[in-house]
Image 1 (cartoon, helix red, strand yellow):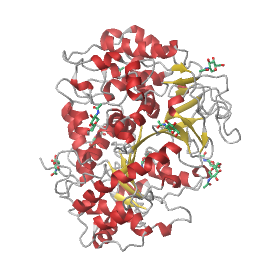
Image 2 (tube, rainbow, N blue to C red):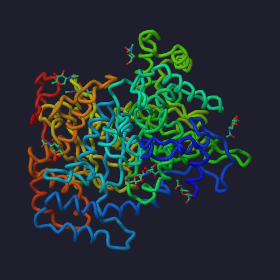
Image 3 (spheres, rainbow, N blue to C red):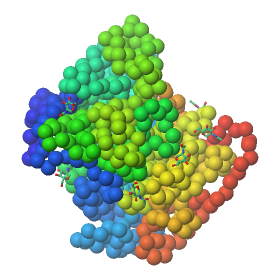
Length: 617
Ligand SMILES: *[C@@H]1O[C@H](CO)[C@@H](O)[C@H](O)[C@H]1NC(C)=O
Ligand SMILES: *[C@@H]1O[C@H](CO)[C@@H](O)[C@H](O)[C@H]1NC(C)=O
Ligand SMILES: *[C@@H]1O[C@H](CO)[C@@H](O)[C@H](O)[C@H]1NC(C)=O
Ligand SMILES: *[C@@H]1O[C@H](CO)[C@@H](O)[C@H](O)[C@H]1NC(C)=O
Ligand SMILES: *[C@@H]1O[C@H](CO)[C@@H](O)[C@H](O)[C@H]1NC(C)=O
Ligand SMILES: *[C@@H]1O[C@H](CO)[C@@H](O)[C@H](O)[C@H]1NC(C)=O
Ligand SMILES: *[C@@H]1O[C@H](CO)[C@@H](O)[C@H](O)[C@H]1NC(C)=O
Ligand SMILES: *[C@@H]1O[C@H](CO)[C@@H](O)[C@H](O)[C@H]1NC(C)=O
Ligand SMILES: *[C@@H]1O[C@H](CO)[C@@H](O)[C@H](O)[C@H]1NC(C)=O
């Protein structure tokens, strides 16, 4: 019905294109057919901002479809994982009997991919590939394939947002498909840097000047339509050429269109969430009290007690005031470009772009002067510390929650990279008791230590935040210091946190956290955050390393690892239903749960001493 309508309206050229590599993707449904938003008459049911006291009606309506769709994959996955003496099928079917709409006993699984640029995309991709039953070998011995199909939420932040966005915008493509592509082109071609641009289809040559001219033209279209542009527009458009499988990085693809795809509507794919932080007017540094915003296919907003509201994503840049569009006002669509959303979550990289542009001369980089001038032209010359912002103007939360929303009086909402508050894992939206998540697989590719491995700074930030009023009553299990993480090697293998919820303060039980840190198993996956290009072999080796971490070398490090993943999935559900824990789970929790051990001795290590290498070449 209206999907076809939008397709026809927007991009007739795409429908005529014969390139088979164009097929698998979401919807280029921006009405302009390009990057520019469009002003339209408002629908009869006028879009409005809602408060944060519940999840959206759209998500509420979608969840039963997804929860139902996870039942069979979960039975398959848990059965393969091996839980002797436990009747998986009987348990899961009883938790979600045919015809029920009450899924409260069924495990509710989330995966969260941290920031960390291309390192985070590649390492996170290794985890997702291992969790995906469609990946060759993933359901074999020692595999955890099917965990992705059992998941309800898939969250990403910054580089992890590139991963989640790229998968979701490209019709839930597999990591293998995004990596290997079709005969003419893969999507994730990182050997040619984002500054040089992609190799053209067929000819396989670089056309850096043409690429940058296109990017500048696309952003100009947005400006010509009457909307302000910030550095993030350029950054996001450039990213799109590496993440969205469509000509010119698919300028018409919107994030909200994910909700219009048949797979999403059928509940066949998880609910994607990308995270960004709010920067209050005049604020230079982002603190833990910053408002954490989420983008999902339906909305941009937050449960935090500051802004405490959600705006319909599809109608961003309409003139909302106190949550409503004035009766005489029009609506805007197409502002929520998928590339702008991915660029917002990773806006720290604006500076990366800026450094390259300012440090370069057209003759040696091939970047044309008009592109350099255009990018430099949007700099806030009064305030260079604002160059990392993504500007949402007009502000969807203008005059909304004025007593508590720091941006209520501002004509624009400034959002920045979700990792700037040190919460480099997109956990906040998954911790809301309203979402009832049972377990989060938190894949951490942060570069905390001097040699670019994580030491769980992200978890400590979220724990600290949970003690402050900004957390609005959401709980998070305590986690040890960086030194303990490093000394005990807790950053070199998976660790479970919050195994024993009765040890937590009273309140809604938070999810069990399965911390999956990036560590070298089969490759040096600790590449620097600001490396801009990766040969295909290196990309593949890092993805594979992420896979080995996720599966603990297909169970060669711990044959019970898949069972332990299954136990983590089941844990909260077993507690709720008062079901005895399978024997193997007792052993797993003994091995993987953090039970309060610490080691604070300063051993002067680089930060990553205990490397459990798994070189099987
Ligand atoms: C999206 O993926 C599904 C499942 O693989 C497939 O059936 C469908 O044809 C794909 N859609 C497009 C537009 O390629
Ligand atoms: C969200 O729900 C509203 C109200 O039921 C509906 O009109 C709208 O189409 C839904 N949006 C999406 C993207 O499904
Ligand atoms: C684990 O399985 C995957 C998929 O079959 C394979 O690519 C990888 O080499 C295996 N790793 C080990 C350590 O066996
Ligand atoms: C956050 O706000 C609380 C009060 O609401 C305050 O006690 C705390 O110091 C603030 N933290 C930061 C990092 O600004
Ligand atoms: C969260 O914040 C909102 C807005 O300040 C408030 O109405 C609500 O009661 C808070 N919820 C909890 C659990 O504290
Ligand atoms: C929003 O308000 C501004 C300022 O009054 C106006 O220029 C713009 O056209 C309005 N946008 C829409 C879509 O009505
Ligand atoms: C910018 O990127 C280009 C292409 O990758 C590279 O050749 C150039 O050295 C970079 N310039 C700076 C200053 O980083
Ligand atoms: C842990 O990471 C933080 C950065 O996130 C760093 O400042 C600190 O020095 C690290 N500490 C250790 C012991 O690795
Ligand atoms: C990766 O880790 C190894 C081992 O600590 C170290 O020698 C190497 O310098 C690190 N690489 C980067 C890019 O940090």
